[in-house]
Length: 320
Image: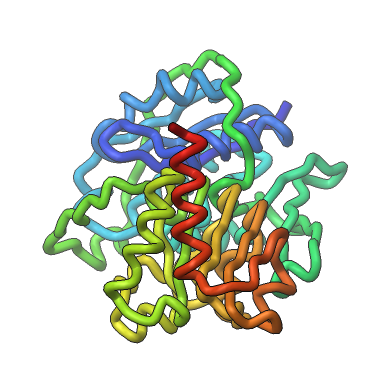
């Protein structure tokens, strides 16, 4: 069975959930191998092996932290040369998609972004994508070179599958471009205690209908009762009601949770582009003709300030 390389997203050896999802998907199309880079790379092996990685290629160097994505692309290119995989899988973060694009260019291969599922095909892996505001589902494959595919977080349930997880050192020679852009400072993100927006299983978002920064407390209360991340529409962040880092949409973050709750969001195409692949969508809006209702699984026509607090209390009651 051909090997499928998974790029490991980790923080000092702690593997993030989207990588474990990629290992689950990789098993559908081949034998999973992993590439872990930077400080703590070797510490990822046990977790990766528990979730199906037969081999873990590691390389630790200061360049991965000190510079932007090029050193990581150099390493993945070296891994591809060493393994000759059937495909390379990367999580669909902003950095992940840049890594994938640069790698595909170097390999002379095609790239597919924002897949929501992978299937084995006679001529290589087939990527499933949801497009045009979830109006269509497409299936496509790379016809030239080694496929490089990015997959949206929450596209697959994590399934443990113990494997060998043999650790091998990866030999990497950094290119002349690797040190072209240096990271000169870092500011730790202030923790909210909530899940990371793009990785959360549940997201509660507020829009123009929230009508003020102070009213986002209603959205946050529901999110906290569900253990969810908080998102916002472009209208809300442009008005200064919520941080731009929480924007969901075409010019913000793309999310694909198991449950997406949209409160006071009309459902403009820009917003829908960032959340259309959510598994279950619930909307609360006073306007029965709001476009968001064309997309939802469940819709509530009503004032969010009446509906959302009741929903919050009901969640708390059931959990209590």
